Length: 109
Image 1 (cartoon, rainbow, N blue to C red):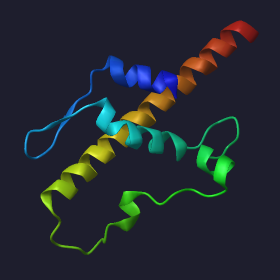
Image 2 (cartoon, helix red, strand yellow; image 1 turned 60 degrees about the vertical axis):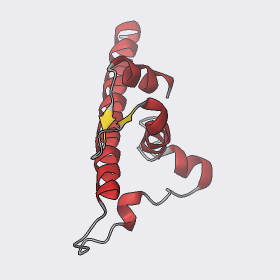
Image 3 (tube, rainbow, N blue to C red; image 1 turned 180 degrees about the horizontal axis):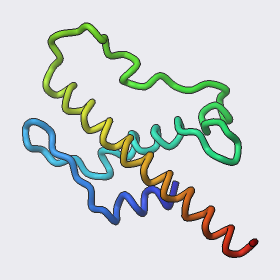
Image 4 (cartoon, rainbow, N blue to C red; image 1 turned 90 degrees about the horizontal axis):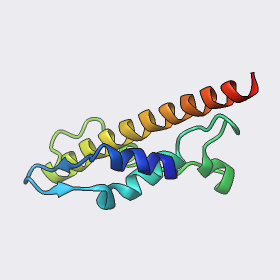
């Protein structure tokens, strides 16, 4: 988790909602933590949430109605920020896994 946060901070990622307010790492930290806890890890093959609690929490996307026509702009902006943060976290996790694999391969092969 520490490496993911370090990478996220290094990119200086900031998101703006529809009103122009900037959302920084502090605002998105719960999102990053949830993305980390609900993504599979190569060592266990399970998510940390399943390992710790035995179940994955419901994500906000699980609560969105697929046929809902009118969505409040703030909710849509948060959903978009959430999606970008999850994608960024997934990318960071993939990069970290590849880095650790290469590091292990270099020292053990």
